[in-house]
Image 1 (spheres, rainbow, N blue to C red):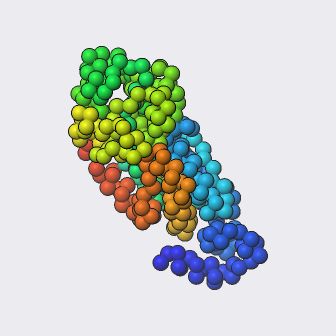
Image 2 (cartoon, rainbow, N blue to C red):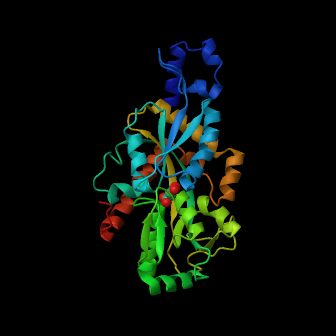
Image 3 (spheres, rainbow, N blue to C red):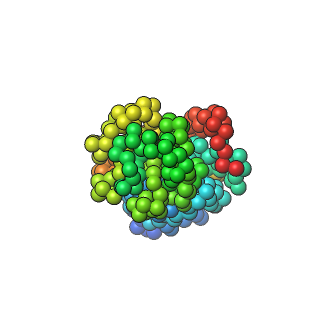
Length: 338
Ligand code: ASP
């Protein structure tokens, strides 16, 4: 509906100029309003609220490349890590709502509104949704020389050494933080948390043996697991993963009910026109059906969401439900970032 009305407005504005015809067809469809250059007329930045080389970064770079082809403009990634993803989210909430600054963030968008009682931006009202991207399984991993060869042995080690075991995460609000909390709750034993700006640098330290344990997404861990650079104990999904068929589920390894997947979505600042978020959602859908992207996601243990979930409406409904799901859990745990 919106798209049709927008097309009519474009035609009414008589926009079939030579300059427009020179743009890729998809870019033209986003069109222009009288006197405005067609969107997008320059490169778009997607802010990743974690360090380069981590799982959010990996997913975003794969998506950005194909979206850029569809939009006829480069889509570049900027890493704004720190404070569990809230620094990058703040950057986008405070950006101009013109479609040139976007955010790709994960389940942290569902937990942050309850975890952080004071923020420099509105964690719910500050954004327009564009579409869901993927839901990524997690893995429980450790430095390769840790004295445990199964999840049961790891649990025994943590229980025995308690806070001597270090747990790396990407700050409060990160998926690695959430997974670590659930893990410590499931095994009823604490570890000492070491926060990073993203699990990319945390992985480097885990491989180097500076930290002991991490729970992170397959998009960051699959290659390191296959290379034997880290030890893996379990995947956090009800079924084993085709990308890591030899790795048991947490239930098989002795922790039934320990399940987490990390959903990701693409956002724009509040007030970004619907024509632009709709255009971006079309480009996102194109990226998510790209054969190479689908194959790369599969190799990293994940898959794109179904096309109908990569829309502003489906994303908003899912996000709202996730905020409602986590708020009582976080309040009951009394786990706040501030
Ligand atoms: N997404 C990761 C996490 O939440 C961090 C990262 O992407 O680096 O832990």
